[in-house]
Each structure stands twice: as C-alpha cells, then as structure tokens.
Length: 175
Image (tube, rainbow, N blue to C red; front, side):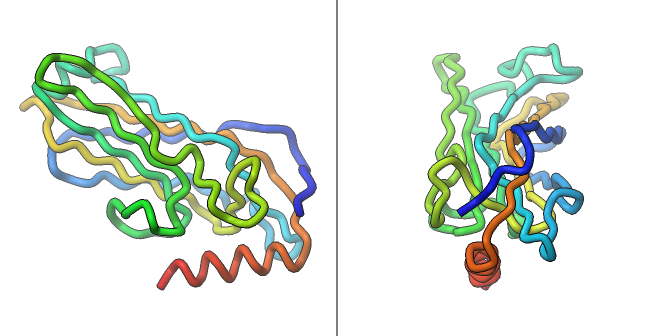
C-alpha cells in the first residue's frame, strides 16, 4: 500500500492551558510533507503527550490545584472541540488524571488510531494539518499547564487508489 520515502522523524507542538473549562487549540502544519500530485502522505506511527507545569519544571499537581482531568486529542480535521472516539478524524487521544488521593496517572485512548485500511503500522494522513485540542476541568488560580504533543511520523508514497480512498474517507468524515 505505501512505500516509505523517509525514516521516522518527530514533529512537536506545545500549548499552554491557563484557564479551566476552556478548550485550547493548536495545529501542526503538514503542508510541506503532504503532496497530492505525488500521492505523498504522512504516516503517523505514534503520538506522545507530555504534561508539565509552568516553565516546564513546576509540579503538575501544584498547577492543577486539586483533583482534575486533563484531556488532549489530535485530529486530522478541524473539529474545533473535543470529539468522541467514533469520530474518524481522531488520530490519537489521552488523559491525565489527578485524583483526590493525590495519585497522578496518564493513559492514551488511541495511540494512534488504527481503524483505517492498511494502517497496521500507523495512521495515514493526507490533510495539510493536524489539530490539537487540550482541556482541563480544574486549574489552580495561578496555575499554568504546558501540554506538549510529539508526533512520530514518516513520509510515504501511496498508490493512486489508496491515496484517493484515504482522501475520500477523510472528506466523508468532515460531514
């Protein structure tokens, strides 16, 4: 289905959450990597989520200020908010939980989504951006939470039929 054109590389984006109950949006530009004419796409192998306090060094529990859930999602279409797991645009998602007992834990729901055809080793993306949404339900009054998304990917060349199928699926997911 795909022929790798590059080795794996990492794309990184950091967003800062400074208010509770407000979705924060960011993007990773893929325009330099995706080429419709050459049927060139990005294959997302894995997505890592890193949570840090202010200036990257402060304690996350101090920034949260109490029991909280921090959610982050990566999609290949701009939904403008968090989506449900059945949304075909969802590439990866994760949650950081700080419970009332003071235990901090993290889990990924999709790492990355592997529902698509031929995506045994990742998710093929033919759109020119990845969209990131971050949210926390609790944040200390002066709290600042930094959320970094690291996308491990490679550039692949797809057959005409496969590129078209992924593009149609992505367009259909837009509805």
